[in-house]
Structures are given as structure tokens and as C-alpha cells.
Length: 272
Image (cartoon, rainbow, N blue to C red):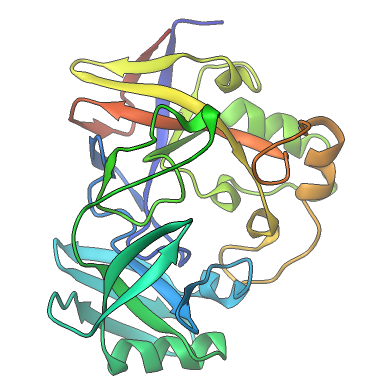
């Protein structure tokens, strides 16, 4: 394996499971990408994502500043939302963690509900919470303070060569945005990210926690919300492990974070 790679893409997802924003730089800290997944969608009091509501992919999100997010949809135009820290407080189950969240009001909820054709609400975290992940392979991130609605680990890294390998097996190639990474790297061989221990730059160290296991969201076009059976069917034929935590179909690596730094597209990371 090479000892260096280059960052080719960076992504921020201001609203969990809506379309993200490709950025040229991103501040990374132990809680993840600054501004990532500040808001989340709930339905009937429970977290909901593109797996259940694929039309969420048609809603682009852009962080205007620390507390302001712009929502955009081709048919419905745009809506600018200022995060409300003083709305109605409710408690939700977020991957077995009971956490208090703040409802963001009727305006953004009604706008989004009309697009996804379901009655949804938008919520923000009330405060940082201690995340419990009761799986041995996630010991690295179990018990960390979390201030974002990330699934498990703060950072998801994918590899350009891995996507090229997958696309060589697909009838219709897919873009990297299907996998919703935070950091995309080039310079590794296909699937070498499976065996990386860490990526480092200066004071920042991204430490590999485990594989990212995949679901139907990867089969959802991140522009139109249309869904088919690929790439999951093909990945199952050669990127599947037994007894996985979420079905066992793997692509990309979850990373914990030590230190803080701003990464930019074109930066070099040292690999160990």
C-alpha cells in the first residue's frame, strides 16, 4: 500500500439524509465535519432517511452560516431556515440513544412535507450528548461526545479506485455521491481503505473504526430520488461479509478523529 493519498472531494450534509454540499475545505474535529448533519428529519416521532423517503434526495441543502441553512428543490424553489434553539423539545430514539431535540417549526416542516409527500418534522439537537454504540467493532467511537446526527462515526472516507472497480462491474456507472462520504481520497488501490489504520495531516489523525455497511440509499439517485437495485446487488457478490452489523454489504470506512484541522481538496494525507 502507498503511504500517501490525495483528497479529491469533501462533502458537508447540513441536514441528515437530504442532498449534501460539495465543498473545497472543511474543518474537522473529534465530532466530525463542522456544520455536518445539524438538522434531522423525523416522521411519527422517529428518525427517517432516504431509505424510507427517497425524495429527500431531491432537497439540496447549503449551510449559509453557523445557524442558517438553505433548502432548495427544483419544483418548490428555496427556503432559508435559521436554526431555532428554543422550539418545542421532544425526546427521540436515535440508534438506541434517547436524546432531546428541538422542533424547528411549521414553516420548514410543511415545505419539506409537500416535497416528500409525507408528514415530517425537522429537528435540531438540544445539546451535545454521549453516544453509546454497543458493538465491539465500534469501540473507538463508543462513549464519545456527539454534537451532530451522524450514524455511527464522525467521518466516512471513500476511495476513487474502489468506485472505479465497482463501476467496471456495473452496466451503468454511478457517481461517488451515492455513498454520501465526507472525504474522498485518491492514490490507494481499490479497497485498500479496508486495511488503513489511519490518515494523518499535521495535528489531525483520522483513525479507522470499521467498514461502512450499505443499504438502499446507495441505490437512490442523489438528484432525482429515483431508485433501482444497483449498486447493492453487485456489491453483494464481492463486497459482503458474514455477521455484519447492518447487512454486511461494505463500501468505505468509518473513521474516528483525533485533533482538529481544516482539510482542503488537493491536500495530501499520510497513511499508516
